[in-house]
Length: 559
Ligand SMILES: Cc1cc2nc3c(=O)[nH]c(=O)nc-3n(C[C@H](O)[C@H](O)[C@H](O)COP(=O)(O)OP(=O)(O)OC[C@H]3O[C@@H](n4cnc5c(N)ncnc54)[C@H](O)[C@@H]3O)c2cc1C
Image (cartoon, rainbow, N blue to C red):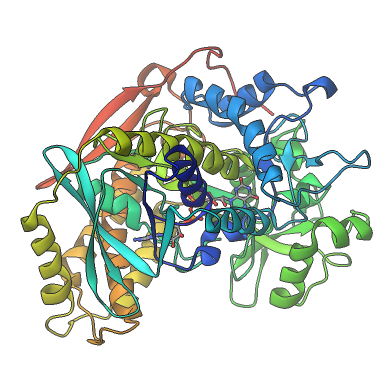
């Protein structure tokens, strides 16, 4: 399910593992090259040159420290070990990595990474990676693409995964995909915030579908705000812009990050830079647009124009097209923007979920590799590493287990929900207004800084909105009914926003991206654990998992 980096990498590995003996359906809401992964800009992290000073241990330490010690260290160790192989594997499949003078793969700096270890291709790394993987998929007869099919439900029988129900965008046909094994790779929760770097098709479908199937969501309180979203559109200005030397400035022209992170400065991890920016704005050292939107400046004029033209090509293009600014001559207006979800569908170190036969990979999964804050350039590598692991595991499982028949009652139920309930009577409320309200509420109550009273108010409003929503679909057509798909997505948003809100209220400490004004300190005594949220008939239930600590004891996190 899903055809981003994780889904495509998984499909290839499943095909390689079960050559001639497996049949793989890639069921995906968008055409593969419209998946969010295509817009990854800056780079993919891996240690390539230990002989030049970098080391796996250093990548592991940076990731664990970046995570504010909430990452499971066995998972991080596996990640740093496998990431270099994925870089080379992609190279063998045709990935045009940028080169150094000596012809080897080039790497650049990213926030919180002690060495330049982000491999890149201009500033369009995701586009080139996706093209490489999609091309490779097309070489395998075992892989069949079902583009523009939206998965709406995970089916189970006898405690095992039994397939999924999906609806075709083209003609509204509802179909059962019966399968022995499945991999959920539906990407991040995306557009539950209004100011976000995601495309509009990135919605939390996968999280909600897994949650409704009884699988817990983990670490959901941790939402990453990237420091540099272009104002007012929210389009991402990659961290590589600062990796190449860009500087953040306030209204007084001051390089304010020197005060917040004296050593790492503008390349401190994202949670730290975003908090510094919001503080600058709140203390009156920001700018305002004519429409009253806050912003600070990202100054690339200090970079050699040739570097901008060669290595930050699309950033320049984005600024020229969307803001009428040439970053060679003028600073860029930016502010923190919703960008990534550290939490997700609870999965073990192999990406296996609690439901036998179902794996999760990529941004939708939570193996707790990223803990409370992800380092830039680790996510695309994570998608590749766990795409590979889950693809292999799922294929092996399918080859050694008998098929499970889905329960007819579960399928009938889904058919009724979609055709009778959503496509039935005319809706009483406009779903697009509801969506706007959800997004506004998340922006207001669950942003960079959080506080109990405001979050509780947010959760109350969210629940009230859900009760009155009673969503339906105005457009009753079966063909390309995007209205229906949007209503399904909004329905999933309610579940996921509620889990984020409840977990954020529950975690009474500050750690990584979760910064509580009322609990400003990290509390390792009570909170060195993961929060899991299970769906129950009349609400939800919390459960906990200890953080796996192998090499590094939690210490104070300074940069
Ligand atoms: C603008 C931007 C820039 C980024 N830059 C970087 C970077 O430089 N380096 C880095 O490491 N990370 C970066 N990230 C993060 C990284 O790109 C993502 O975390 C990663 O690409 C997610 O990949 P994925 O395979 O999990 O999901 P996605 O690429 O989001 O794909 C999800 C897939 O699931 C499908 N899908 C969704 N719902 C359904 C459904 N109901 N039924 C069927 N299919 C469904 C979609 O169609 C899509 O194919 C960036 C993110 C953004 C938003």
